[in-house]
Amino acid sequence: MYQVVIVDDEAPQQETLNRILKEHFQDYRVVKICSSVEEGVEYLGKNKPDLVFLDVMMPPSNGFEMLQRLGDISFEIIFTTSFDHFAIQAFKVAAVDYLLKPFGHEELGISIKKFEERFALKHPMYNISTLLQNINVQTSTEIKIALPVLTGFVFAKVNDIVRCESDNTYTTFYFTNSKPIVVARSLKECEDLLAIYDFCRVHNSHMVNLRHIDEYIKGDGGQVNMSDGAKVEVSRRKKDEFLAALKRI
Image 1 (tube, rainbow, N blue to C red):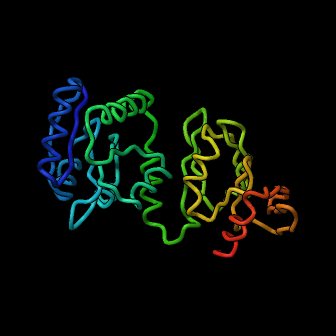
Image 2 (cartoon, rainbow, N blue to C red; image 1 turned 135 degrees about the vertical axis):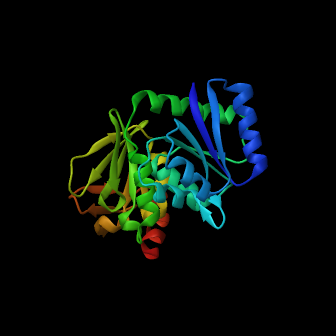
């Protein structure tokens, strides 16, 4: 039996989540419902459940502040949020699980399955630490991204990534100061995560960090020479988009 805590300031959402768990997930018992950050800090500072459903926005505070105040986080977390571009991007970059409100038992079931896999492996909560660090940093150069590998995750600074090269459903990441790693994500998935941090897809098989370009050589599409010595072709189809991206930085 998994012990569950719900931290959410909306009574209807508390009731809905509690009901769905009772009806569809009998192995999950809600031991406490907290309606504010203060109440969450008070309870979770003294009790250690298995899983916390944590609402992001709870005015005048938020779920991130609650976690920072707790410090020691020994429980798994599934965030719940209405659409919030900033929060969702932060979750994706840190590979943290979240549910978009409103959700039903099917969406909840997917998150429950992921929780059980994490719980069985007993991985350290590096993802949550990375999420909180990213929220606190002042510039995008300090942002870290969680990269899924066979053994778990590698956490790398976005600014240390020079380029990404596609190999079907896998992508190889090349760095300024460490060996390349192969990540279990398509290049399209990586592009969705990194585009806002000055990365540009210059070819079907290549995405580059614009801040690591040493030289652009004109041509049919052209070529970029990267800071790691790589020479990457720019496709004709991507040339205009690439040049526009260069001007923005």
